[in-house]
Image 1: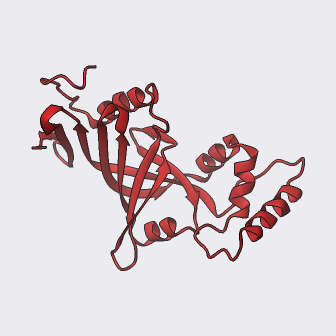
Image 2: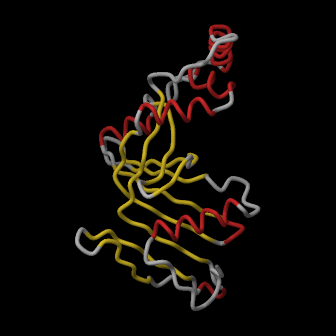
Length: 202
């Protein structure tokens, strides 16, 4: 798969195309290939963006996990649509995706939570994500409280913690090329035709 070839022809299926790029990124020197920017809209339609980690991807969409009381979660409850961006600098590749958002099943959230390091599990209980924190000591004290509570016990997934799945209806792929003559193409979901692939000027 020579992405830098002048005559590079992407797959007609963006899911297959993304999987190929994602595997390439994971096998590269990228420090965190799963990092993706997540953009949402607040109640006043102001855009807000942050970086989260893509923990799963398949035909059904992109999955990330968070505190359901966080700002991003509250924004997604109001407007369940999001935009994602992956940027793999060392490879000069970028992928954008947009789509509706829905919560993962409780079973899926709990399964992923069980796979996390114990420190991260305790941290999920201790953090009132996005809320005002008076002092760093308050957070550390709360962490110690839950560390003691779950001492030698299985740490269950908090009811306020879980996943979201972004179900894409739009993709855009970008390949850095010499002279800024980049390769750029998009896929738009059509109810009758399925995915429609078109090239874009860089």
